Length: 353
Image 1: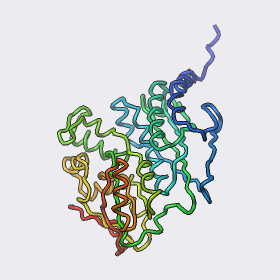
Image 2: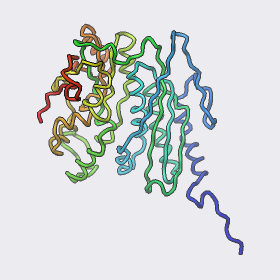
Image 3: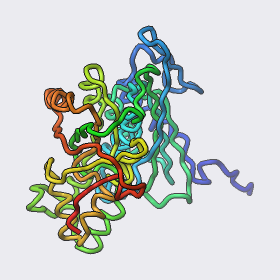
Image 4: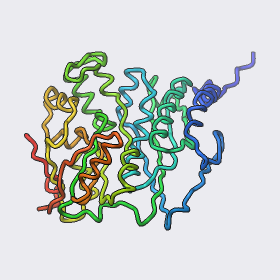
């Protein structure tokens, strides 16, 4: 009897299931297309026409990132249609910090075994994030890697490209003492610090995803998996009307790691704790997780996902423009002279402990 010939499927890669995933995600992807997208799904490369007639010297701005261990929450909840928004947000929000307008996005999904419906759900979220940011989802890759990931697990990353006129690039170089810091509210924890989040809620407190947390007035799982806010709308409300000297995306490393990235030498950010409402989820983790306030500000966004540094004369107008656009915004600090180069001397926070 002739021995059965091996196939790729025998090795754990089901190309037919991959084709079915593409078929299921197709409408989500097409829903992000605009007139600048010149290729459809299946091309080797993605073509995007640049509209630069209103720019003197167009500059492309790129950013790449992933979702991190927040994906563990998606696995636990078997909910996969929102983490794609997180993936887009983590990339696009970085690009926005340079004053750029997002153009297009690409994604990468890797999993041990492709399940078409799950992959389609992931891409549905990515497409939603692209719509929120004004990006076209022009391409991506779904890699089936048997024996590489645990059953039901996957990882994902994204790549965003935007454009800005060179004279309008925002780097932080124009920041000076006396400038005001406008904080724009986050939607929650966003996509950073989830190793500590899981340690607090599931290891230390032994809580379950369907536990109702009185302080949050919702199930724990819903609070933890809420997607990262995309700040394209906020930037669109401010940048055409005001000169913005610096923009900060509060990601991994919280206030202490991210704010200094845009500060000129010799300056510091004096942040007034209490100038904005810190969401209950952070207060709960601090109290019940026995985490110091300084560690909280070193890890999480603490309710402020993006900051804009503007001239003092413009600060109130920027806040009004943001609020008119549906954002929650407050003046939360001032740029002052720095007394040193350590992170505690560049970011001044009067923490309790």
